[in-house]
Length: 270
Picture 1 (tube, rainbow, N blue to C red):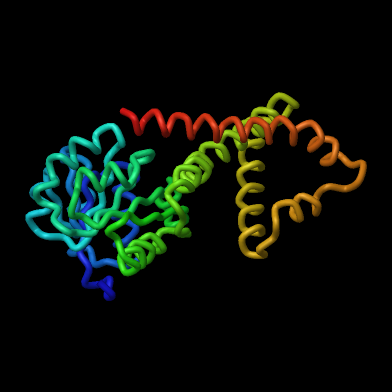
Picture 2 (tube, one colour; picture 1 turned 90 degrees about the vertical axis):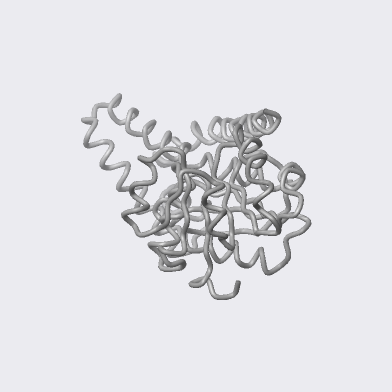
């Protein structure tokens, strides 16, 4: 599977995440549209992919009949079990990639006893090819399988290979982070309105600032603490504001990640 242009990748599920990954591979030029196969029970979800030039199917069984090299299971954890039960006789020794949060490798490998399984945890910014994906390999997957998965997901953002016990943590941190960032933008906007700024003005200023901070942090490879120090004068307004914000923000973030991990475990248990 060294030449990804010749690789065929099938997606069972064309929702927000699965659809974004499939579209990203095509738009990045990594996998030809004709080599991307997408299955979903909702015809409305399939229409954009047909227009993109991918092959579309009403179900996973029909997709597997066309024998993709890689099968991506892009369905919710609550339905993954039933999907795997349906597809198990057809999967064979194929490379299978699961994006289902909280469903461990052991459960997937038990349901697909001959497949080479890799779990991944991507996040929403894969929609703009700037996401983050954690990767961990099952017992039957080899280094070549991991390399293929990493190359595929590198087309839509950063990739990190890790142990499975770290995967759910990475999923909670990077998966929830877009909502956390959005919440903070909204909180700053509302704080500006409360203090007297027009809502549209406050939001525009906050969003522009967020965009600029992200670009500087990434382009200059600056540590967040160092970046904070650039705008924190001794005895100044930012220092006073950080004194009030840092403690509650840190404690709230720890509690939020703990809650996300607890919910991940609940979902995995059905």
